Image (cartoon, rainbow, N blue to C red; front, side, top):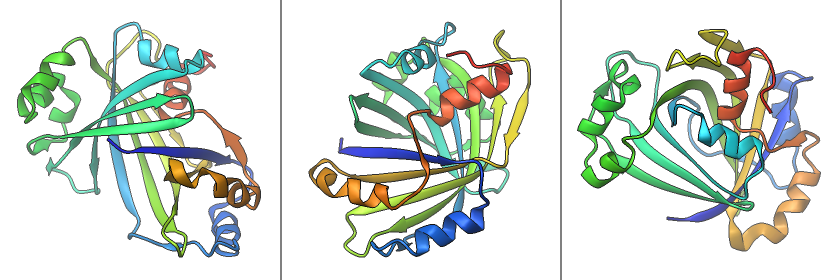
Length: 222
């Protein structure tokens, strides 16, 4: 389990071309790392939304559970179950393999649990159920020294996966929001401020999960 910082930035007032131009002119010379791709996640929570509540309350020790897969093809996908934990500003991620599933079965925890290769993990998560689907398009960049990675997420959309009482909408698109994340090892924190100071975007602690819950609710729940 690797520890790293993830500093989030948000932009809602300028278009993607302007954001990419700013990043391209950054003195740390960010360059493409991987081809862009679609990312799909299903987040799991308790009936009372304990994960959401811990985040909006600013808990210093919180976690999220999600199933993630890549690409935009229908049919079978190869998802990974991820535990994202945060201790203060440092994040940790554990990943567990899941045998191939249909996209429909990704919304059924019983199907996910049955296809998890780690049976102990499946039993530990029996109290959770699908809560929110999140979809977006991600671009990957990296500094020349490979120490700092920048992702740029666009074309966000959310869907209610659990027909919960909080949701006034079944789905919501947020095409104007652009989310950037600077990711780096704990030992490289000293150099991060200089990078962030040259990115004129708003720093945010809001996660895609909490933002999606609030979008579907139609009001801020924080």
